[in-house]
Amino acid sequence: NAGVTQTPKFRVLKTGQSMTLLCAQDMNHEYMYWYRQDPGMGLRLIHYSVGEGTTAKGEVPDGYNVSRLKKQNFLLGLESAAPSQTSVYFCASRTQGKSEAFFGQGTRLTVV
Amino acid sequence: AQSVTQPDIHITVSEGASLELRCNYSYGATPYLFWYVQSPGQGLQLLLKYFSGDTLVQGIKGFEAEFKRSQSSFNLRKPSVHWSDAAEYFCAVAPGAGGFKTIFGAGTRLFVKA
Image 1 (cartoon, each protein chain N blue to C red):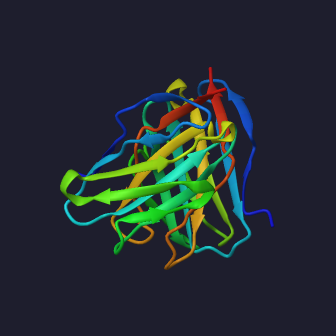
Image 2: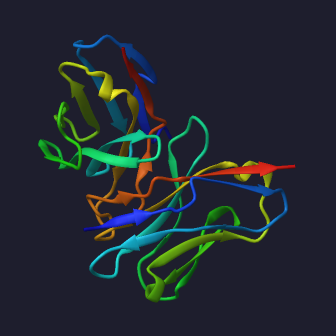
Image 3: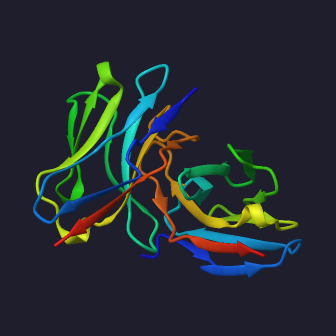
């Protein structure tokens, strides 16, 4: 039972490069989330999705785009990476009507 | 505006000693409250949650938390800490059972000394 899987686990980008982070869940959850975690700031919601084909902005969406073409996948894209996007990124999923969110192990991204 | 405050950035306790991690929230209505634990290099795992009813809730790994409406607090406790409890702990508040926009505190890192 894989749960929530994030790919890749680590990445170093140069300023201006683009990349896509993949989140996959095998629990048939409707809701999926992308957070970033920065020291002293906890987790901040970037974007979320309440179902296939739908996405919405969270607290800190600027510089990121997302897509949910398939129910099990939620992609986070950085079109032009900036050093301020150096962070640890977490994906989470949850089923409708339940409170517990399941988290991936995180992606540590460094932008130089 | 909703907010969650964890006043202690880090806490060190001796193995076997009791633990209390503080959490204060600001929210217009009765919130849904959560405590998560993050072990090094891992994602977040739910320890316990409070929606309504008994204000003392039990969670996994021997943790409990008490909701005090008058103090807007939801402190996490454990009677006897084990070395494996060393981790970062996050308090969170949400407007509903799932809460699309769950707000997390900044976290408290727990160190356990032998």
